[in-house]
Image (cartoon, rainbow, N blue to C red; front, side, top):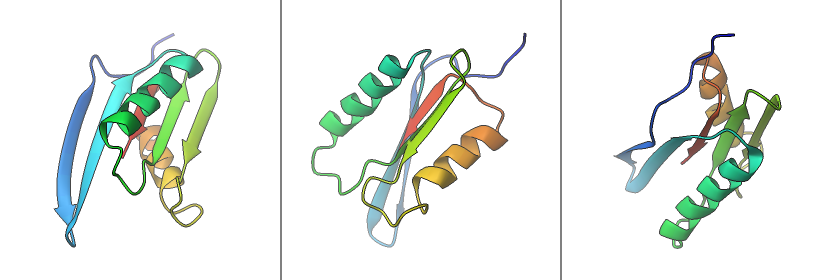
Length: 95
């Protein structure tokens, strides 16, 4: 079965209203890999106010997200929505 994913980790950033938003994406195959990636980004940005994430795993049919203190449904769900609408799987995104 064919599926769409990414080959390697990547990042991008932009500034909006004096706040910097840094997005990271990485290929992951398991829940443990996704959690490890999320924790590595949190460790790199200990002073970040929020570390919003979402991930989708093909084999276990898992999708998860977190608003990490943002108003409920305003951060994690939109990130997950972008992943799903892009048709990606086996990826984790942290912003």
